[in-house]
Length: 282
Ligand SMILES: [Mn+2]
Image (cartoon, rainbow, N blue to C red; front, top):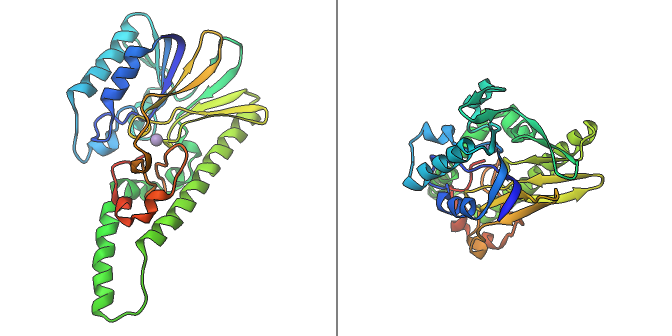
């Protein structure tokens, strides 16, 4: 299919979670005039801790470079996981433009603010250490908790500490975290008199009118495998390249969490599932 623009974010190349094969399928299916990479494309944060780079991930990079070489407009808007690129605002690398943000005008004349969005995430903005901690892993927390429980028993402390209960409270906080994020972006585009925002960061795809503006989130290629496309008439569409198997979908973990597009709480019946740390990276 040929579309006017493709918007993707949060590919997290260099991590085990990156679904490069799915992305390749998607890129094979969709040709476009514009390709906007809306942040966290290469995950330098996690590569500091070890690189997981597959042939498919290589191919993703090659395909993107190839598109740029063949006259498609390719723009990279750095996110927080590839923030090293932020120093190069306005610079073009070969055929790829780097911009901190950009205003995209759709074929029907609507003006959308393009940005990754982490600057609207109060956790990564003001508590970087907390975001990094959350990123390093909930698994560790779970292990610590197991040890603590043993200690509690050894010390004969009464009471039961429920991991499921704890996880549920985290989910509530995660959901309100997403609302806060969306609210502040909606507020920002309204203030700037734009028609909408296209962002990423929270790994929760959306395409939703909110009053007079449109909130659009590209989602991610770690869990939900989603992209936004703009058709030749300017209409935006949320494309789901792959539907994850029901409740095996991402469970929210530490504060800055990944929540599947429509958060389902079923998995919380099984506390063990909350140990999946792989999808907990924003
Ligand atoms: Mn991010």
